[in-house]
Image (cartoon, rainbow, N blue to C red):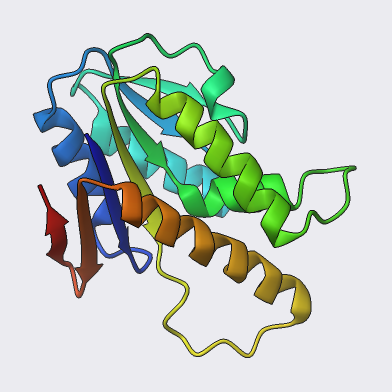
Length: 175
């Protein structure tokens, strides 16, 4: 099963994603943490997410990219937190220069597809940064373009798509 959950930051989507992952039958339950932790604010977010998962049987895998290369057992249920971070990590990889959005989309979607081929379930979280009207610099627009394209591709493939708005889930697609 593939579940996409998107919404604004702080909307409750991560907690909901963890609940959905807990309901799935794949073992073990893997939390794929994709964020780079570069400052105290991010360390605090990580601590909060770890506290939410404490005692719930999740195994954490920390990756910034190449998720399909992680040691994730076949038949697992995996929560990817988040496509937003994963896209930024690939697009702005240190020392490689900016990758164009088309390249980023192909690279991440191929990696994601390889992961899907090995595991039982994937719950993937993405921040909704598409609704604010834009007006960004060219670099940020390229990032938003890649993230939007990936979100659409994953939503098309997903069995379930849920948006978080004002702290409430709205499910658009559910098989």
